[in-house]
Amino acid sequence: MMIKKLLLTLFVASLSVTSWGQKIGWHQTGDASYYGKKFHGKHTANGERFSMWKYTAAHKTLPFNTVVRVDSDISKQSVVVRINDRGPYARGRIIDLSKMAASKIDMLAGGHHKVTVTVVPSSTKLGPVAYKSTRSSAPSSNSASKMITPKTVKKDIFRVNCTVEHISKVYYGVQICGFENISNMLPFIEKAKKDNSQIYVDTIPRDGRTFYRICMGKFTSRYEAEKLKNKLKRKYKGCFVINYSGQ
Image 1 (cartoon, helix red, strand yellow):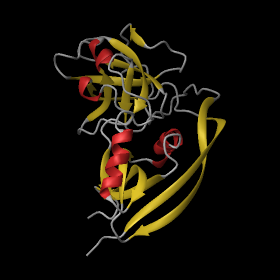
Image 2 (cartoon, rainbow, N blue to C red):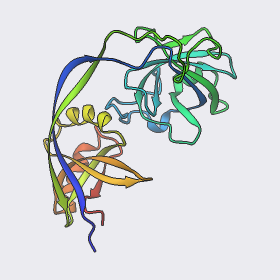
Image 3 (cartoon, rainbow, N blue to C red):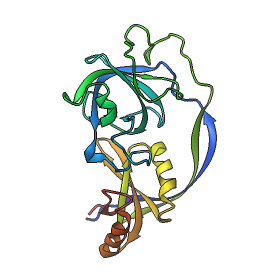
Image 4 (cartoon, rainbow, N blue to C red):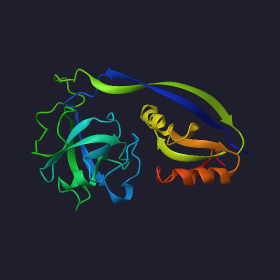
């Protein structure tokens, strides 16, 4: 039996506004890992291309463009990075650093370190900084201590118009990216619309949650979808043809 799928056609318009950001001083402690050559040049969750030579990182929940200081409890070194991706998804790990950032806290040899991640002002310069232990001074996310909050943080909000279609027969498209959070996928969709006006969101369940696959095109012929993939693969590395019906 063919599985019915939910396919959303999204039309996204952005408005520049100001909003409250994550509180400065918020911190968490856990394991850090890093990623490099395998992902170099591929799109991050916010639509940028990942560069292993820049001071960036992936975090599961912090808003994109949040700037954080990462203090290694092992090397006693610190580095400041900007969040532009989602992850890591390995159990117990709280942040994935770029290879460049990881090298500044001597993490390359061991692969991961116990670290403390602390939100700092967005004006903080990226790169290595003097080590600072936060165990006794920085308030945690559950602390009642007074925190300094930036007055405004530039943020995009999106006005979305969409149509919903239940797919009950075979259609093919090209998946260019995937997200677990709707708010993260909207900036990417806005950029992708410049390459193709046919943008679809295919929803699939994963571990009790909904995963959103961002796709271009809807064809009855797989051949047509493959042709589109060949046009897109230079810009969207790793894109591939999918079957919307789930078969």
